[in-house]
Image (cartoon, rainbow, N blue to C red):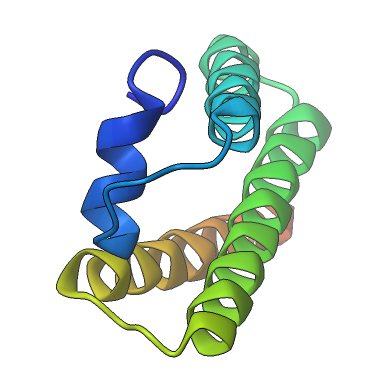
Length: 111
């Protein structure tokens, strides 16, 4: 949605109708598409190192996105329900990615 319809995404999150430039939102869509392709290709591997790096990449991306969105909302002093939903979902994605990152890296218990 960010890649093809940047105006609607900006309006849904920040509740403003005017966008000065569409380039940052399209770059966000391109980055999200790239990370989704990396994660899709990691589904077909059995190597723990590749799976861990993919999970770490996702966690870092979502953390940066969470921080940038939070800082933007604090600077503009406007918090909408769409923005809060985005922040909560990003925090959940970060926690899930970090949890699986540590679970994949654990050594199996000896019985």
